[in-house]
Amino acid sequence: MKTTTMMKRVLGSWAVCLALGALADGPTISDVVVRQRWPWSRLVDINYVLSCETTQRVDVAVTGYNGTTALTLPADSFSGDLYGVSDGSHRIVWDPTVCAYTNSGVLTKFRVALAPTEAPVYMIVDLTKNAGADGQIEYIYPGDERLETYGRFTNVWFGVTNDSAYATTKLVLRRVHAGSYMMGDSRLVTLTKDFYAGIFEITQKQWELIMNGSKPSYFNNVNYYAARPVEQVTYNDMRGSTNGSPAINWPMTGHMVSANSFMGRIRAATGFDDFDLPTEAQWEYACRAGTTTIYNDGNPAANLSGNNTISNIWLDALGRYRYNGGQPNGSTPPSGCLPTNGSAIMGSYLPNNWGLYDMHGNAAEMCLDWKGNLGTAPSTDPVGPASSSDGFRVDRGGCWGANLNASQCTSSTRLNVAPGAVLSVMGLRVIRVLP
Image (cartoon, rainbow, N blue to C red; front, side, top):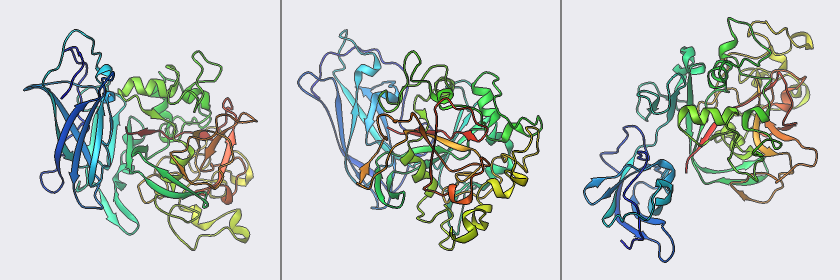
């Protein structure tokens, strides 16, 4: 390997998969070539060939060495083909400068060992433990006895709804693989990166744990608040404001967030600096879960004709909205009401094919994007417009109230709200986009 001057000190420790998941048989990696870019670049290209079934997707674990000495390398020093990798030739890029390398030394014998690893289906984060603590992170892999496959469901963990801890003190996320779909039924969108999506909307207890005891929600019945979705939180509370210091303004400032926002605090609390809201394209892709129907159960009989535009028997099974308990008698229920009205406890309705709950109804879910016209041209990893003429951000999924009908809770319905608006129907779902 051709090398520029590097310091011997390395910060952090890293392998692409943080839990056991190595594949003993099947996929193999060969033809590994490590080469530093030349001239004037410290970036290191790691080229390799993965051999696996054409339909298979695996993660790749990387271990770095200087000769026989194992190096401890931070996750954010790597990018490229690490997650959800398919058969063929690929490249990982290592950036030594992220490891705080200086000119005080040279890694003359830098090499790597690559191993194909099974992609987890679920990731569980214990919000009561500090970043890096033993047991803070758990992964569930294919073949785990907790997973079930039947009908429209594949490797879905239904038992997550049997323990309230998974909606209060722990955060459960489902791995969503990259792919293409028809967004809004008319725009071909391709997402090139895998991501983890929260199976539930962020609950009031999760918000309380991350935000140091904050309890902002309207539905505050002391016996039931914990597992209901947090609401009366704004986009600015979630990420930070365009008027803040520093100014936070997706997509111009990318995934930068305010340190005191929910995203800033959950990143610090978990050690993952990639938690964020989904883009509108990521949200709809996760909601549809491979379906093309108006709701995400894939039922072609579901329709919005006649009275079905208002109340809808198909939506009744999938999420809380105005006509199945959200607004009895057409009015907002009192703040201390039971979860049979207003917002519902997480897991009260059927999930989509990928095990994500409440993508229809309950709390409306904020997305990163400014409000704008989607258009019909094919797009890859769209981030939405740079600004909005009326200053609104997009929210998706419909909600328990606000006089919204069944026609406004579909997979493709787009709504919008001011970033500073405080609403008892507005909440969030978090994702982690993988490098």
